[in-house]
Length: 424
Image (cartoon, rainbow, N blue to C red; front, side, top):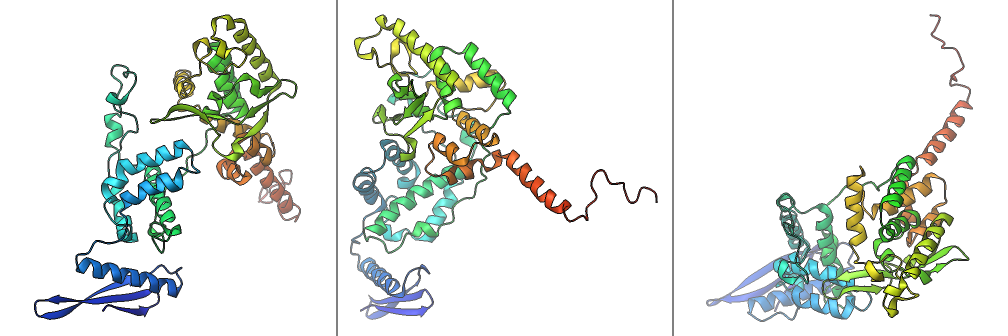
């Protein structure tokens, strides 16, 4: 019969006897428990570990699912009920790519903080992979010479952000195992994730924004011009732009309703679904000049509608391909990135246009709540964390306020006061 001993604070020892030849020998194991676990919960965990130890010594199978088995249960019975298909698809990729090949055959009970820490350490030294589909899985062939991943990219180790994504997947999956009672605590919570420097959000000085708008309006075709203007002037995400139809515009109120997004997964292809979050459902006031641009574009579509199929008439996509068909989700983004690089805006992405939008509003003292609503953020604190460094005017005003307090003491010479050391 096994024994359980409490050895110290959060420290336990379990032991059992095993017969070796004609004699019995003790096999003991030390356990370190999560400090946040109550003592009674620690004792239950020690009992579970003792049962597993005895089962292993007797060669009995453990009544504990492997990570691979649990991952499928988690995806189908826990995650897919509430998460979007895109989220489920992303988690499936993380599992298939690096998690299950390395940890999939381990019972959940063997995923200790130490083992997971070793896995993460080794993971960060692995070369990068591409998420793009191989040639034999594509509906259309790639352009000649196009690579899945360049040699320079493949030579780089995994980025801190990507490593965080893998750890986050494991952590979320094991948290569900805790909720259903398979684990007493989440071992991934005790794994220190990689630190990464937060990248500054894209911003442009106003003269550069005006110059970019002039280029877009004069050189881009109508559909792609609308996509960029909706992102820069109305803070729409790429998927939100792709899902917009003209009935979303309230011409009298001068607003546009955003409540759908164009999304894509390899399994489902492109589809229209809910926006990223509940806060993503919003009504945005359009700039009056933007309303005129949209009105002219709509009437251009109406005038050409005799060439469109009946199913598209009167319900046009705002951003569309030829003959009014829904645009490919990534087309505006790919086109704009090439356009920006060619015109001196290297590194500016389609998503970066949202950051330009938020930065300009904050610099012009638009209140944080209003900016947060336009961006579709769930809370103004999200906007503040992302764009605190985009408010230099407020920071200068803060410094000026402190300066007035300091000067009010009468102990600091002003610029008009003579230099006391000048006549020495």
